[in-house]
Structures are given as structure tokens and as C-alpha cells.
Image (tube, rainbow, N blue to C red; front, side):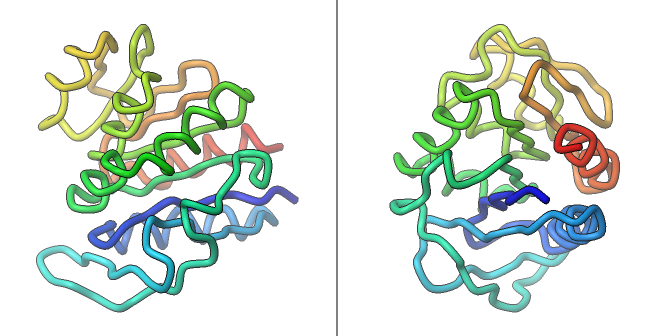
Length: 172
């Protein structure tokens, strides 16, 4: 059983989060919600705000050593907030350096750019951030999931099941 940090800010994609967390739970893993906010975050569901989700660990208190992997569901608003938070960026950098699986989807590869992890890495993402990734030195691929060492990237919510399965394989 692994402990997986699901790192989100308000505006994460509700459907994608559900697939990732359900798949991890079915494989026997525990998920902990990590966020820059200390109380709760609000989900985005298609074109509207959805329910609140309690935060288990504030990013300021999160340490890579407390988790076996990091997972970030997509969501433009969430990803933009996460890449701007120094504690989240540190968490990603530390987890990657420790060789832990780091899985991001949709717009969330922006966090890889901010953490200096995209350079030289093969990735996929939502097509709208392709240029950001290639400008940071990444090799962008139009595939559902790309695995490059311990960095796993998913294209968008439709590919969440494939990304979740890749994380489960890494934690086996």
C-alpha cells in the first residue's frame, strides 16, 4: 500500500480526479489531498463550479518523504495556481529528485516547467500548453500517456484511466 499525494487547487477537473482516486483506491493505495489552501478546494465540473473537497495536507507542510507518488489531475485554473506556489514546486522537485513517480495531466505539466523538470523530458499535455513545454526544453508528444523515467504525463481527462493505470504499475 502506497500513500499518494493528489495535489490540487480550486479549479481541478472533478471527473478526472474521481477516476484517478478511484483507480488508486481499488489498487489498495491511500490518497491524501495536498493543496496551497489549508481548508478546502472547489472542483470544476465541465463548465461550472462543483462541490468542495477537504484538504488533508497544506502544501507548506507537505514533504516528498511523506508520499510514495504525486498525482495532479488536470484543470487550467488549478494548474495555474499550483505552478505559482513555491511550496508545490518544491514538493515536485523533491519528489522527482527522490525518484518517486510524478504524474500530471492536462494543464498540470506547467508545474513540471516551473520545477525545472520538463527540460529534456518527453511529455504530453493538453494541446494548448504544447508551446510552453517545448520552450522549456521538453519533447511534446500527442499521446494519451507518456512515461519518461519517473515523470508520467497525461493528455487530458479522457486519458485519466490510462494515466491512473500507469501510476498503479509504478507503485506495484
